[in-house]
Image (cartoon, rainbow, N blue to C red; front, side, top):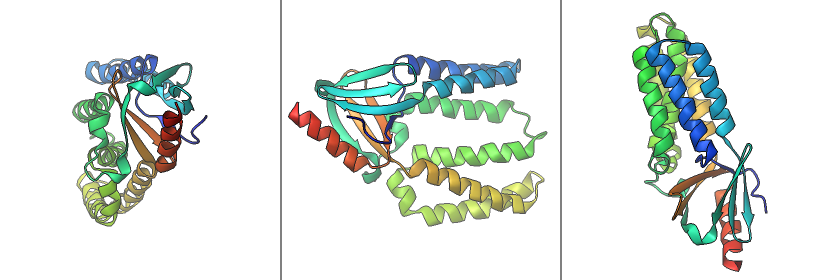
Length: 224
């Protein structure tokens, strides 16, 4: 039984190897300053290939579908299922730190190694996208929506000032604030299911309707 619109966020098996290799290539390119464009392109390609494609609920477990492979999680290995959107302290970084940690490392190295003074506009774009992504990782989604007005107002005020400091038109900051809004809404509009397992640690699953997906999953599990 296919769970409509759901996909595994946590990479497993070959997918995990692709993620580690992809980030490693991009980080190596920035540190060594050699073939940066090619290494970043290959890294992004590997990350795209590692992404989850769907979720199926079978009679004896969950099947996580990736591009060219599948990973099965038997019901007996699943200890707990939670909906992160309803938990006030559920930070996604806590459940996906192995891969999210690579994103943070890439960001830090990019800040150190990238020629931001030559490309201030590119810096602003990447900065805004990363800020939105880090909010999604480190702030519970419940609180993001609860304080969404305050978060957006703070960004809308700070970005024009920041744009002026790097020599760009403050109006650009307003536009970047809209970009931030788009990205934060995109990343937080989904429900995130936390599956605590015995053999594969914690798995994060994204889907449009988390409650419906958990109900479907628990119904099949109880019948099994």
